[in-house]
Image 1 (tube, rainbow over the protein chains, first blue to last red):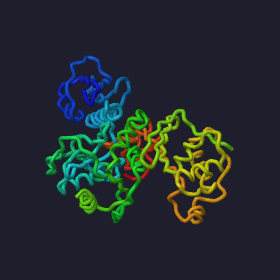
Image 2 (cartoon, each protein chain N blue to C red; image 1 turned 30 degrees about the vertical axis):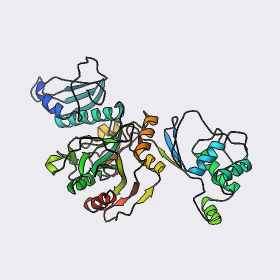
Image 3 (cartoon, one colour; image 1 turned 90 degrees about the horizontal axis):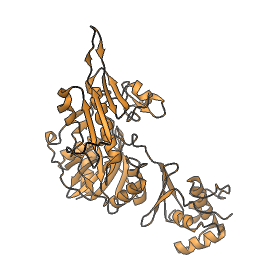
Length: 258
Length: 163
C-alpha cells in the first residue's frame, strides 16, 4: 500500500525480493487486502534450457510488458519507474509535482522542472548549504497546499548516458524532513552554463501554471491539482529564470527565506 | 458580433486578480489576467464590443478603448474560451496599444500551456533503449536514450537534444 493505492508484486525468484523492496516508494506499508489495483510481475531470466541460450529478464505492469532486457538492473529500474509514475498519478488526496524540495526556516523551497533541468544538483547544493531535504523527485502537495516529504534516495547523474548514482540524504550530510510544510518559495529555473540568477517574479496564476506544467496528475485530476497548487502559491513568491552553477544560486534562494 | 463565453468542459479557479481555466477537451490550462477575465465573464451573448468596453471600463474604473476589448476577444478565441471562433481582429497590435495607452496593466493577457501527460511530468531514471523509446514505453518520452539524446514523443525516437 502506498499513498492509498494497493500494489502487488510477484516474482519467480525470491532472491530478488530484497532488491525489489528497496525500490518501493517511500512510506509504503504491507496491505492485508488481497485485491490490488496494479500487479507487477518480475520474471528473472538467466540460463536457458540449452547451452548458449539465455532467457531475458521481463517486467510486466498488469498485462503490459514494461521491460525485456538481458540486464536485470534495467528491468528492475523499469519496474521502479513505472511504479513511481503510477503512484504519482493515482495517489489519493495528494498532488505529485515533478520537483525538488528542501526546507529552510520552516518553509519549503520548491524547484519544479523536468528531467535534465538540473534540479537534483540544485537540491544537493541547498542541502549542502544546510537546508533540510524533502525530495529531489516529487513535491507532494496536500489539499491545503502544504508539501510532504518524499524521502527517496537522491539521484545524481554522472557522465552522459550513465546510470544515475543514488545516495541517501544522510550520506550527503542532509537532515531528512519529517512534517508537511507551507511553501515559502517556488524557483522555476533552468541551468545554463555561465548564466546569472536574475529571476523575474511570476504572478500567482502564472506560478500555478508553472507548477501545473510539471504536475503528474494534471490531466487525470485537474480540479484537485489547480486547487492544491493555488493554495501552495498563495503566500509564496514564484521566481523564474536561468541559472548558472547550483552552489551560487543556493545561497541566493536561501536568502529569500531569511 | 455578440460573443458568448464557453462554460462547458472547463474547470475554473478564481484567484485574487487572475482566473485559471482548464479545458478538459484539449488539456490546455489558461491564466487570464484581470482584464481578460472580466471580458470573458461579460461575454454573455447579448453584448457587443461597445457594450463590453463600457462595462469593462466600469469594472477597471478607467475608460477602456474598444480595441482593448477586441484584443481580449482575439486572445480568448485563440484559447477556445468563446463559443464561436471569432473572425474580427483588433485594429491595432498589442504593442501599438501599449504605446498608445501608455501602460500595459489594463491590457488583457491570456497565457496558455498544454498540460503534461503523467509520463511527460515523470522523472527519468536510467537511460532508455531506442527500442523502448520507439515503442512508446511508459515513461520513456523525455528521458535520455542510450545514444545520449532525448526520447521524443509520438514515436519520433531518440532524436532530441543531447542529454
